[in-house]
Image (tube, rainbow, N blue to C red; front, side, top):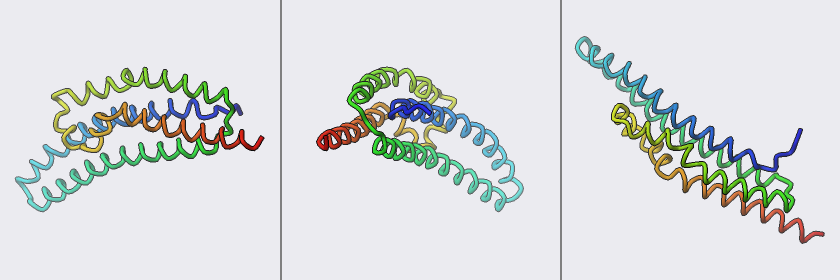
Length: 166
C-alpha cells in the first residue's frame, strides 16, 4: 500500500464535509415536508399525538445539526492524528504546501453548491433550524485554512524534531 503522507486526507475531509452539508439540508427538507403536515393533522385529532410528533421533529433537527458538527470535529481530530503519525520527508512538506494552496484555491468552488442551497428560499426554514451547520458553512474557508495550518505545523515540527536526531 502506498504511503500518502497525509496529502489526500484533506481532500477526503473537504469532500465528506461538503457532502454532509448538502445532505443535511435535503434530508431536513424531506423530514419537514412529512412531519409538519402530519403534526398539523394530528393536532386536530389528538393533542398528545401532536406533541409526540413535535418532539420527534425537534429531536431529529437537533440531532442532525449536532451530527454534522461532530462528524466535522471527528474528521479534524483524525487529520491531527494522521499528521502526528505521518513519517515526513522534506519533499512531502513541499507537496503538502502545494496541495494546500490548490485545495484552498478550489474550496470556494466546493462550497458554492452548499451556499446556493442555503440561500434558496425553499430551504429557509431548514437553514434556520441548523444554526451549527450554518456556522460551518459561513466559516468554511477559515475552518479549512485553520485545520490545514495546524496539521502543517505538526508535520513541520515532526520533520524538524527528527532531523535534529541525525
